[in-house]
Image (tube, rainbow, N blue to C red; front, top):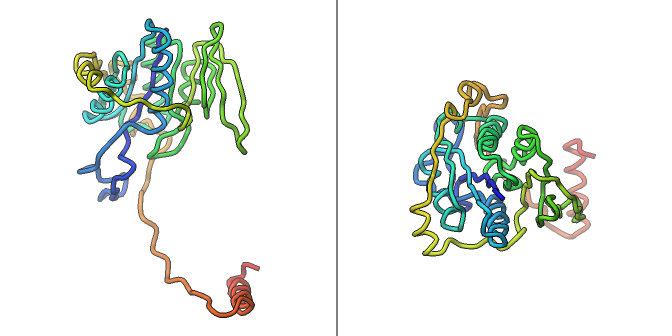
Length: 261
């Protein structure tokens, strides 16, 4: 059994984010980065399969610059067996579809039985990559996954639906599951695991290595960020005071004045 886990390194949830001078992204200087929170649950789900079957291999994959090595080493310290780092400026500048193409190329090389991703990324919140990746590698998929279980060659998942409803589905393997936060209790990297991680292999690849030259990157992107900016500050609010009836009448008058009623 081989499980491929897709990880994204994102700014720390408590990081102070300032917009870059060209207004296309944030200033990354002095920003601490971490593994995307959704992806940690996906990794834990894979590691629990490995705990139950020592023959299982867990491969973590991530796209990004040199700093992504830290995230991959953390995953290796938690128990993953090896890592693939796509360290390529074009791959890193891709839109969601481009990133899915990169991960699909890795998946086609690795031929995993299962692919686990987080439901979404903390920085973009698109939730678009998992279904795209599943389509590109032609496997069944489920999103919002809370539990996974291997049964008779299938991946049985319980997934979260709107309104708190749950759904149980059986996916024939190979399959992809996009895991929801809170699906499990994520483990920490132990000191022993951190020491062992230093000896585990991290395979560095480029878009060219994956046969994607000219197919990914800003030039091939279907979606481009034109501008990131802070909205203009609103004018000061007016506070209505007085008896309840007077406040209600004043509020109604304001609503009518604005043409909202």
